[in-house]
Image: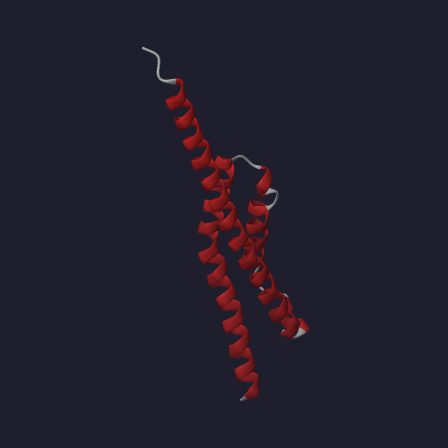
Amino acid sequence: MMPDQQALTDELQRELERGRDQELELHKILDVLRRRCQLEDRLLDELESHLPREHRDQVPLELVGCFERRDRLLEDIELESFRKKRDRLAETMQLLPELEGLLFEVVERHLVRLHSEGS
Protein backbone atom coordinates (compact mmCIF):
# COMPACT_ATOMS: atom_id res chain seq x y z
CA MET A 1 0.00 0.00 0.00
CA MET A 2 1.41 3.40 -1.02
CA PRO A 3 1.69 6.11 1.61
CA ASP A 4 -0.74 8.96 1.21
CA GLN A 5 0.78 11.65 -1.01
CA GLN A 6 -0.44 14.40 1.34
CA ALA A 7 1.18 12.64 4.33
CA LEU A 8 4.49 12.48 2.42
CA THR A 9 4.19 16.14 1.47
CA ASP A 10 3.46 17.09 5.08
CA GLU A 11 6.42 15.05 6.34
CA LEU A 12 8.73 16.65 3.79
CA GLN A 13 7.48 20.10 4.80
CA ARG A 14 8.20 19.34 8.48
CA GLU A 15 11.71 18.16 7.59
CA LEU A 16 12.38 21.31 5.57
CA GLU A 17 11.13 23.50 8.42
CA ARG A 18 13.26 21.60 10.93
CA GLY A 19 16.30 22.05 8.68
CA ARG A 20 15.61 25.78 8.35
CA ASP A 21 15.20 26.09 12.12
CA GLN A 22 18.51 24.31 12.69
CA GLU A 23 20.24 26.51 10.11
CA LEU A 24 18.82 29.64 11.76
CA GLU A 25 20.00 28.44 15.15
CA LEU A 26 23.51 27.87 13.79
CA HIS A 27 23.55 31.37 12.34
CA LYS A 28 22.47 32.84 15.68
CA ILE A 29 25.32 30.98 17.37
CA LEU A 30 27.69 32.16 14.67
CA ASP A 31 26.58 35.77 15.16
CA VAL A 32 27.24 35.50 18.90
CA LEU A 33 30.65 33.92 18.26
CA ARG A 34 31.58 36.64 15.80
CA ARG A 35 30.62 39.32 18.31
CA ARG A 36 32.71 37.55 20.92
CA CYS A 37 35.63 37.37 18.47
CA GLN A 38 35.38 41.11 17.87
CA LEU A 39 35.46 41.76 21.62
CA GLU A 40 38.43 39.44 22.12
CA ASP A 41 40.27 41.11 19.23
CA ARG A 42 39.56 44.56 20.68
CA LEU A 43 40.71 43.41 24.11
CA LEU A 44 44.00 42.13 22.73
CA ASP A 45 44.51 45.27 20.62
CA GLU A 46 43.80 47.46 23.63
CA LEU A 47 46.13 45.45 25.82
CA GLU A 48 48.92 45.54 23.24
CA SER A 49 48.53 49.31 22.88
CA HIS A 50 49.23 49.69 26.62
CA LEU A 51 52.19 47.35 26.73
CA PRO A 52 55.62 48.93 26.56
CA ARG A 53 57.38 47.99 23.32
CA GLU A 54 59.76 45.66 25.11
CA HIS A 55 56.83 43.66 26.51
CA ARG A 56 54.72 43.39 23.35
CA ASP A 57 56.67 40.41 22.13
CA GLN A 58 55.74 38.62 25.35
CA VAL A 59 52.16 38.12 24.19
CA PRO A 60 52.27 34.34 24.11
CA LEU A 61 52.59 32.75 20.72
CA GLU A 62 50.09 30.21 22.00
CA LEU A 63 47.51 33.01 22.30
CA VAL A 64 48.24 34.24 18.79
CA GLY A 65 47.93 30.64 17.59
CA CYS A 66 44.51 30.32 19.26
CA PHE A 67 43.31 33.51 17.62
CA GLU A 68 44.53 32.31 14.22
CA ARG A 69 42.93 28.88 14.68
CA ARG A 70 39.64 30.47 15.76
CA ASP A 71 39.69 32.75 12.72
CA ARG A 72 40.44 29.85 10.36
CA LEU A 73 37.55 27.83 11.78
CA LEU A 74 35.10 30.68 11.28
CA GLU A 75 36.45 31.83 7.93
CA ASP A 76 33.93 31.33 5.10
CA ILE A 77 31.80 29.12 7.36
CA GLU A 78 28.61 30.38 5.68
CA LEU A 79 29.64 28.57 2.51
CA GLU A 80 29.83 25.18 4.24
CA SER A 81 27.16 22.51 4.52
CA PHE A 82 25.05 22.35 7.65
CA ARG A 83 27.08 19.42 9.01
CA LYS A 84 30.43 21.17 8.41
CA LYS A 85 29.12 24.39 9.95
CA ARG A 86 27.99 22.47 13.01
CA ASP A 87 31.33 20.67 13.31
CA ARG A 88 33.38 23.83 12.90
CA LEU A 89 31.25 25.69 15.41
CA ALA A 90 31.65 22.82 17.88
CA GLU A 91 35.43 22.88 17.38
CA THR A 92 35.46 26.65 17.88
CA MET A 93 33.43 26.31 21.08
CA GLN A 94 35.99 23.82 22.40
CA LEU A 95 38.78 26.30 21.67
CA LEU A 96 37.16 29.20 23.52
CA PRO A 97 38.02 28.19 27.12
CA GLU A 98 41.70 27.88 26.19
CA LEU A 99 41.66 31.24 24.42
CA GLU A 100 39.84 32.82 27.35
CA GLY A 101 42.38 31.43 29.81
CA LEU A 102 45.32 32.66 27.77
CA LEU A 103 43.79 36.13 27.44
CA PHE A 104 43.23 36.22 31.19
CA GLU A 105 46.87 35.28 31.81
CA VAL A 106 48.12 38.07 29.53
CA VAL A 107 45.89 40.66 31.21
CA GLU A 108 46.87 39.38 34.65
CA ARG A 109 50.61 39.57 33.86
CA HIS A 110 50.17 43.08 32.52
CA LEU A 111 48.32 44.21 35.64
CA VAL A 112 50.91 42.59 37.92
CA ARG A 113 53.69 44.32 35.96
CA LEU A 114 51.89 47.66 36.28
CA HIS A 115 51.43 47.13 40.01
CA SER A 116 55.10 46.15 40.45
CA GLU A 117 56.31 49.19 38.52
CA GLY A 118 54.02 51.44 40.56
CA SER A 119 55.36 50.21 43.91
